[in-house]
Amino acid sequence: MSEQTEQPEQTVPGGSGDSAVTGGERAEERPEARLERAVRAAEQALIEFEIAVETFRVEVENFSRLHHQKLGPMYTRLDELDALIAEAKAARTGDADDLRRARDARSLVMPMPGVDELFHDWLGSEGISDDAAAMLTERPVRPPERVRPSEEVRRLYRELVRQAHPDLAQEEGERERRDAFIARVNAAYGRGDEGLLRELAEEWAAGPVPEAAAPGESEELYARLEWLARRKELLSLVAKELEESAIGSMLRMAPDDPDRLLEEIAEQLLAQVSEREAELAAELAAE
Image (cartoon, rainbow, N blue to C red):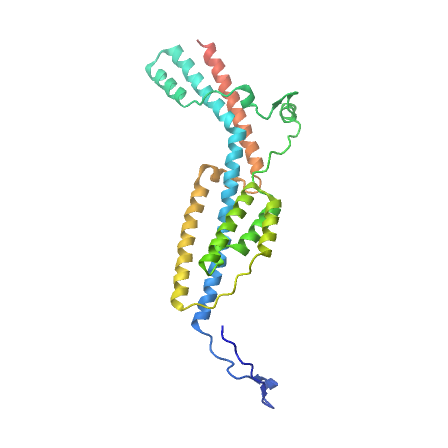
């Protein structure tokens, strides 16, 4: 960036407000400067969008994991009951269609979980757990493990990404450094590791400060805007896929309280298990 020699102010007596006139002042702004501001604004908008997409991706991943851990055995139990009901009906009627439906239902069943797996966090060495006892006695159940990082972890993550995002790099070497750093930030965020995120924040603060790049030419700036637009389109596809996935759709039903959503689904599944068991008992009694 070329230095400008500061000119002494020349005051025009009696002028409007005694305004000062300096040499070379009031020069028209270069078109590239306005374009550069548009590029910077687009970069920041893209970064914020990437943060939102990554935040939702982590929430979907964590919710999917917890959904499988907490509710998987219930789904398996429902499949097993459906197969048993179909088999009991086929055995009673001998109908070809009933026999086919029984075979189809059995083919969908995963290996039946054992008692320890089905009630993996309900039974312990001392017998039934506090949570299970609470459900049986209608006492309040302690909230399940959170399916999303804490608010402080999310704040630290956003701040680090805004500071160290690779799209802010102007040189390939700097971009690679930022890519590697953000990969570590994403891993820490995915685990909800607040301590590691704080260490990474200190590491970034102590690292080299990227030099401010001189404004590029119009062609380079337009190319940059086009790249940012393509990147935004790609992220939009990723976001749409996440939102339309089964887990993403479920999570969007209760974005502020996904833990409660799991509890509601568990209650519905327990009710379905009871209905299937009653249906099976009636089918067996009819033989």
